[in-house]
Image (cartoon, rainbow, N blue to C red; front, side):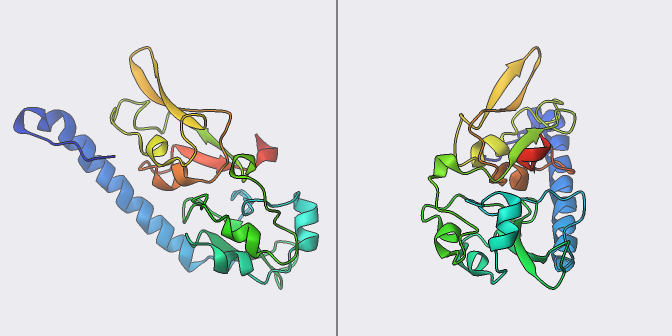
Amino acid sequence: MDDPKIDRKNFLKKGPTLLFRAFLEGSREESIEESLNFKRDPPADDIPLLRPPGAVPEAQFLDLCEGAGACAEACPADAILLLPRKENSDLDAPIIQPSISACVICDDLSCMKACPSGALKLVPKESIRIGIAKIDPDECLAWTNMDDTCNYCVEKCPIGEMAIRIESKEESKGPVMGKECVGCGLCEYHCPSFPEAVRVFELTTV
């Protein structure tokens, strides 16, 4: 999304919003840095267990995954973290935390091809379901009219309007989710709100 040009006439209207957005993005970067410093801990209970694209069902995934990290090494976006398992901290398992680094749904589908154990199966892009994104209108800069130009989540989505789009309702407009969300997390990663107005959750929790 291009930064809007601000002249004297519009500064009082747009200037404070842009300054507030910059403040939120700075707070978010500090939070990400803190998360990276502690990423070797098992995932906290409030962090969704989002496995890489093509992951088989969780119980089968944990049986098959060897924790060797081939998927993480192959990921061009460095989106896959290797964290100790909750049930066995001596063994790692891959996880995606979109607020730190999101899956980009790369053309090569690298992680699925690199997996040696079958924990990740090669599936078409449109069949990927890492999780499902949900929007909190009360935190959204667009829906709360704090920044009616904000559309980062829509702009960054690799799937397009079938996954997320802007709609109008009464005197507001903002993003709404579609049926084709793959759960990549790019919307969450690029959301300038803090906490993020859009987050990706496990499919089993929504």
